[in-house]
Image (cartoon, rainbow, N blue to C red; front, side):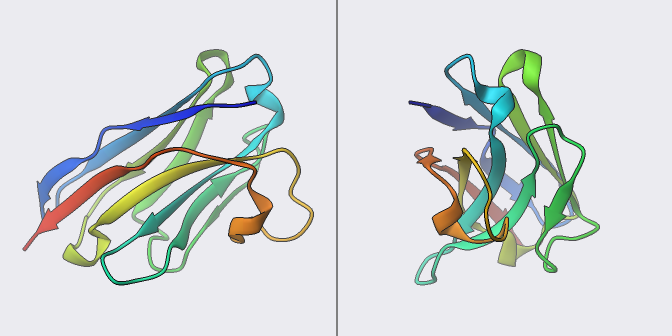
Length: 125
């Protein structure tokens, strides 16, 4: 069992930056692929970014490519997403997720086994 706790959300002006963190419990964090998803009001949850268990591969939604960077520190059981050049359309609840094994695509929700409670990011124009 893995518990995930996100932090770092808040209110920021357009063009600003935030770094979200996701702290995981358990000794097997390094075995999990990790992802970030987000859900805006009235919309379905969507993929943002993912990183392989080793950190050697990362994946991004087209909408955030070049602005967001995902990283992980296995020694700290933590995954991050650095979000730069934020836009009002980035406003959403951001969720961290852990996958025991990705058998399909990193951007598919059903690949992930554990989810955090989410952290709100609001970008004002």
